[in-house]
Image (cartoon, rainbow, N blue to C red; front, side, top):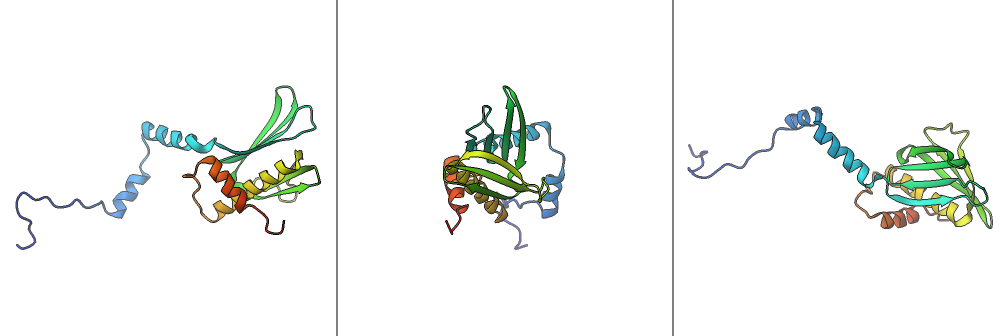
Length: 169
């Protein structure tokens, strides 16, 4: 009888066993819960970390890296474009080829044939290098399992830029 607590005191509640927690996580979400999860996913995913536009074309191409994806917009005419997005997790490598004034960015991903990377030319030299460093830094952070969601966008971009730097430059 020593195991019983005196009257008037409550026993601390125990958390459900791990199996019960797993069953709760595996249950279908309600529409309200689904809306909440989608709203959380949307909230920061469109925050732009870096953007670059090509310079010599009448209809400039654009490369944008946000918290979720890399988007390439190739414009062919007024209000006509091809827009391609790649999840950051699917990127394998990003390289920049630069001269004294201009540069290009080459993207290799799980989505493309590795022998035929996606190349965007005509950036200013500094823009091509910055896009490369931030994107490559993001790829490295994801590969190391670093959660970047809690950092403000500008701070994240600066840290990814440093992480993506080449030591031999």
